[in-house]
Image 1 (cartoon, rainbow, N blue to C red):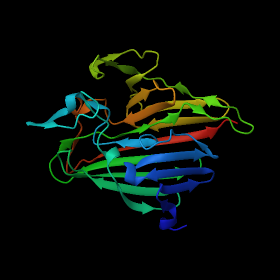
Image 2 (image 1 turned 45 degrees about the vertical axis):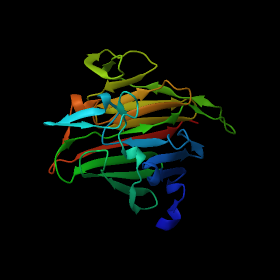
Image 3 (image 1 turned 30 degrees about the horizontal axis):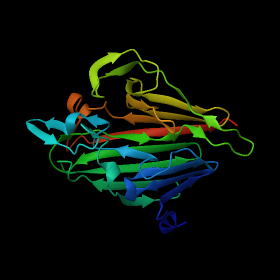
Image 4 (image 1 turned 120 degrees about the horizontal axis):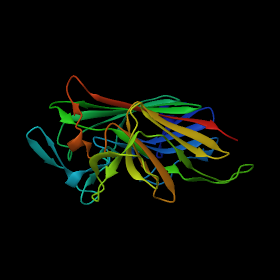
Length: 275
């Protein structure tokens, strides 16, 4: 199959065994679909799937951050804060496509105040997907974050010979970031509390979260990063969001991207069938 045959108006299609992945570079380079044995795992719709969070993750307080002596204002798209970066809102260039691998990129531009390049790669196998994202500067150093926001279906539909199943979440965080009334971390680390959650957790040995649809599928979300946001307050989906720093991290835990030190992070989804 040629690159043109793997790319259509719905996106770039990858496959490995009985697994099919669709990436939509024109819609923020999000994973629009992940089908395992014909079963869709991601909530459908132009705002869902699994989108990259770049050049920041979660909320930035009042949309403001500083870089040295310079103060910057980002668009407030989740009043009173800015949320989830700008990468999900732009078209990415397709760099390369193969049967089970693809690479994409875009150039940072307004409203982000610094020049740079963001790259994202996907590698699919019959039992895993590994995604890597990087941010490079083309001038001044600046703080940045990367991460992913997947919308996994809470309920898998019943199929012939298989009942419907509701997702169960299992993980063992070392701490939870206390969430203030402004929906941002207060800076205090507390003992993890029971859900439902829209909260950031810390796992110093790396993110390791398991979603299980009993009798159907087990899916693990892993990353060497220590930060993960879990959001399960909606009936339709469960979100497990590995990221390179906590929400509001541009202000509280800035990670500088410099000409000699780009920011890079990987995430893997791996699965096994339970039926």
